[in-house]
Amino acid sequence: MQDAKTKAAVSDARKEDSAQYEGMPLKLIDSTLEVVGLLGLENLTIRKVSEHAGVSVGLVHHHFENKDNLVYKTFVHLIRRVRGQLTAGRRGIADPVERMKFTADMCFSDEVMSPGAANVWPHMWSSSAHDQEVQRLCAAFSRRLRSNFMHDLRQAGCAPAIANIYAIQAMALVHGLWIEHRVAATISIEEVLGVFHGVIDSATGQIWKLNMNQSFRRGP
Image (cartoon, rainbow, N blue to C red; front, side, top):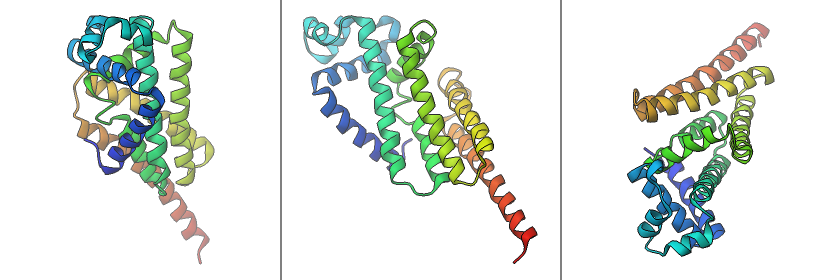
C-alpha cells in the first residue's frame, strides 16, 4: 500500500544497496528473504538459499559464514534499507506533520511488511536480549526513528518535553500496531495507517489550538 513518495524512497535506497553489496551478497540476501517468506525462518537453510538463487552452496558460504551470519546480515541490510528510505523521503518534505506521516507510512511499507522481512525482523529483535551486537543495531535504529519524530514534533510547535512524550507514544504505536496487524492479524493496514495518522493529527492539532488560543488572548 505504498504511495508515490514511499515508492520513490524505496527505489533510491535499493540503488544504494546494490552499489554497496556489489551484486551477489544482495542477491543472496534477497533470496534469503524470499525463502523465509515462503517457508518460515525455522526452515531456512544455506542450501535452500543457494537453490533459490541458482548458485552453489560454496558461493553462499564464501559471502556468509553460516545461517546465523546470513540472517544477521539480512537484518543489517533491512535496517540500512529502511533507514535509507526514511532519509531520502523525509528530505523532500517541508511540512513537519506530513514528514511524520511519511515516517509512519515507511514503518509499514510493503517491503517492511513482506513475509520475509516480517519473519526476520521480530526474530532479530528477540535475539537482542542475548546478543549485544543485535541489541546495538536495534537501539540505534529506534533512537534514529524516535529522533525523527521528536524533530518533527518540535517543528510542529511542541515544547521539548511534550515532543519527547509524543515521540515515545509514536514508537509504541510502531511496535504495537505492527504486532496487531502482522502477528495478531486483528486490524488491516488501512486501519493501522489511519490510527497512526489520526494520532499525529491529534498531537499537532492540540498544539495548533493552544497557539491559536494564546494568540486570541494576546489580541491584535
